[in-house]
Image 1 (cartoon, rainbow over the protein chains, first blue to last red):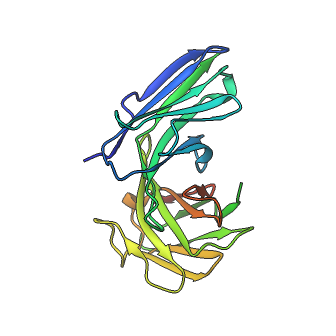
Image 2: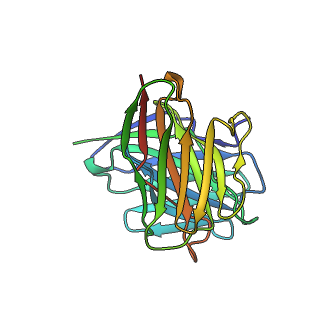
Image 3: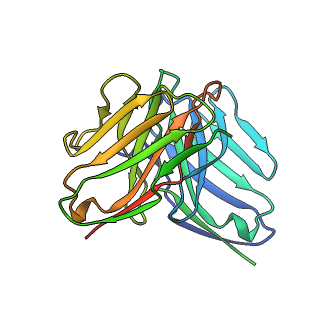
Length: 113
Length: 116
């Protein structure tokens, strides 16, 4: 059973517009959520995170929103740039010690110039 | 952010040989590192949790005798793929948590293994 789900395998957005990537989770014990960006043949790069005590965290062009009641989070990128084209992974964890992250399957974002 | 390196970045080997992949935290100490595997167009799959000074914890379905993990120091974990077969060909990635970074994991650049 997948605990972290990214239901859109791909997304295309025009340059300058907003990209919205969605993620749902099922485990109510998760209390920390992260977004990673990954290029082919490279390791994931940490983008932004949010803990369950917040509903929004912003860092430059990237904003993550968390809706705990819906067990849903989203990553907004605005304005989108061609260099943002990559696979984005949503990940979740809990503060119960050195626990591994649980990843979604990823969403491939293509930003079209 | 914290820096994690992996070596080698890619390796091609013959079936039946063993391959060692190193994961190093360059500017911090990591008591725990994680090893992931990624198949083409799929998500990262956790293989095992590497604990400094103790045995690794393997995920269900991952053969511990096949994938040997040694966390010899606070900055180095190694994954050895023993008697590699073509089905072991994959992209292997390690990660570590840096002190004071909460739950954020920093990933190495990955190692692409091709077994002929």
